[in-house]
Length: 88
Image: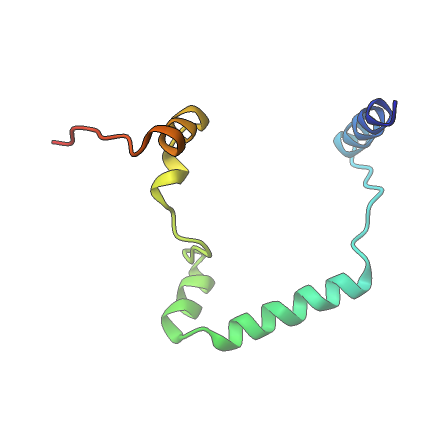
């Protein structure tokens, strides 16, 4: 019963968001924390990272091979070992 109520609430929030109505605001304490962490992260970057960030080319998390596998391939690899493909 609670799951269904959650689904209905989520549906209403999504419909409201589609109309431009947003009912959630991030608490100010969380916003301050996130901004503080972002400033610390920026201060710790080297010049190359700062330049990439300003250009919009900085990737926070480098892509890994697993990012390109389907869920089925990933599960198969986790249970049966690496998927070997012929390249070239």
